[in-house]
Length: 470
Image 1 (tube, rainbow, N blue to C red):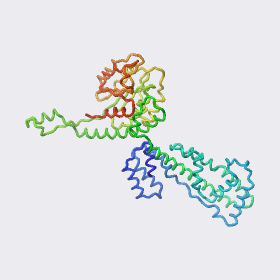
Image 2: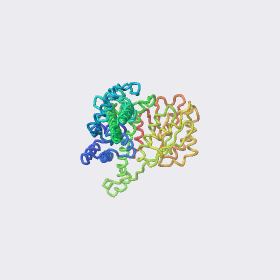
Image 3: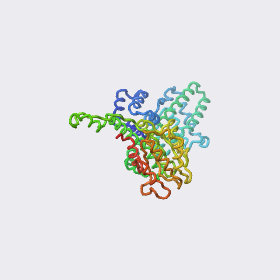
Image 4: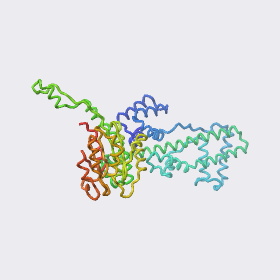
């Protein structure tokens, strides 16, 4: 259970210490003999959000197995004479087996006979056999749940299960020719089939436990989150980008909690200095009665994201963060641009944030030096100004580079006059603003706030300011 909780956390599911303790208490009360009730107890205590149910359902069988039939001893159900006849047939088959007659994947006839007898007797694989199969299949290197199916197939091929079943069919045919009753042969075939399922389940559990151990080790050895968040967006390799994607959901959880706490505090009210002074004039200005401002409204956000090559990773994390914080926003509407403006809000209405971001980036492929923010601003003013009002915070994410096109400052002035505030988030370092085709110095005076967001830590601080209710 400890490994399972660690794997949930490593997969991005928020599980607190108190919730993991609740899962142990629930399991102690309900027991573990009823697998369905045990699974429900863990799911109820450990998973809080519907989007995490899929992760739970994928991981649970890896750690706790599936409901496989028990192994049975086929020889124990036979008469002494039939059991002796079966063992003799096994021995004769091993002695007379032509190694080229069956594709035995390197198994000797004697090894095949031993495995076949174990199958009929319902003997599970030993610890040494499991370790040998695992090393042969590369199991110690597996660290993701998605690798489980492939590892299982490799271990089953290493065991020679298919060859084992071919040998079983040949053995049953030989026994039938020797006069063994059809009823006994059917029972042998059925028992062997059930024992095969049990062997496959044993392999599946071994793979799950190995991946569980590796996931926990990787989770405990990973870099501190602050170090990961300081990785610059520019120049990320795929491994680093995937690592940051894992941290975004955890980061969103913390930002969501902070934003919700601020909103609750703001609803309690803050001191209205003018109202307090007016109310206390009868006391000679002594503030005996306090007046508070209590009107607090969640912000409306309108995002305009550059998804060209130089800003692509930053846009991915920005969009994911904003939509993971959707419950703290009255309304979020998003646009992406390279050389033209595209309304991407429908993607986020129909899909979870991470999937929506993937679809957006797949659909909007960057070209070669074709970014045109000015043209995109003109499209926004012409076609979408109805979505901007006095409650809207307009957020630009981009490096402010226009490839020497018209920056359309008049459009930004019109947007500023209509909205609550304009916030610009730029992934470039400030010393680069104004170099080459950068129009950032011209845009900056028209913004209420400008943030450098060259890494996830800076992006988190900038996003956090959007939920400041002061």
